[in-house]
Length: 356
Image 1 (cartoon, rainbow, N blue to C red):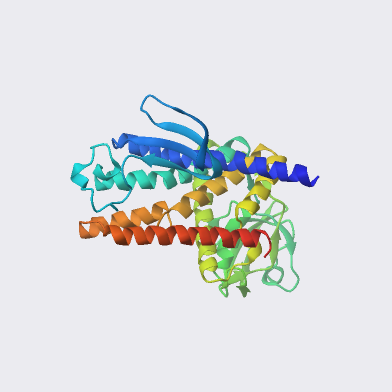
Image 2: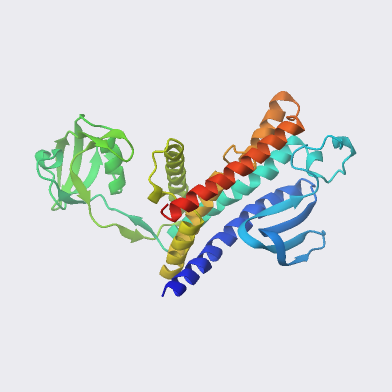
């Protein structure tokens, strides 16, 4: 049983992550080719090559031994580290000979490809499979809370709040949270009759977000799976992707402030476990996990950490502002620091995975 579970997790890890890595590197590859930069190799994984082939442009496409990532090797250096090589003496198809805008786009295109894929996958799921929506219907009314005191009953459908139309339960939650201690006019459908109720949300301190929000003391009915038309799928795909991004940024803040629980941090082992579980539950679960991880992969690579795409973007931003690149020695130091930081972070999250 344990062996089967391990194999499923390992298989899920490769099935889920390999396409995301490929799309990320394909973004770099496409932007490089369009900018006239020679791509020498395109690798899924690191280390010794397992198998591959060379195309007509003399680019080596390969799978490598260590499957934790990938890379696109372009002709020349990504940053100008060598003192004895002058940029002007390089071939015109080297990375450093590309103009600054092209270099920006080559580096940026990898994360953008992941973000685009994430939105596309979510949109596709909402269109073909459906999106879970909680209708604006009240399930439980908590005793002695504002909703009960204001006359809300179980089964009531909320039509509008302060003349703002309500389409799903999340809209009730959003309005109530922003209006603690303020009177809200609820338009309610009850037994085919329209009634109007005035309710004042009370203040509630949310320990998770650490902010004070409004509450009225109601719960939602079970969500319904509803297939969306293409434009609605695109709209909610974008909205939910933006919300995931905001949650990711909040989690990143909590991580740096050491306010995050170990159980909330996923490393390679944790990702393998949930990948195996999603694979076992079917394609819908797997594609949604791929969407979430693709968005996370794009965001992580945009962090301004040397050795990540965001680190190179930071170096190019310096070059744009000061009209010259940082000195090679400083860039070397930053890149070494970035690699050390990333390795340390990987060890830390792996320790969290193992419960250490």
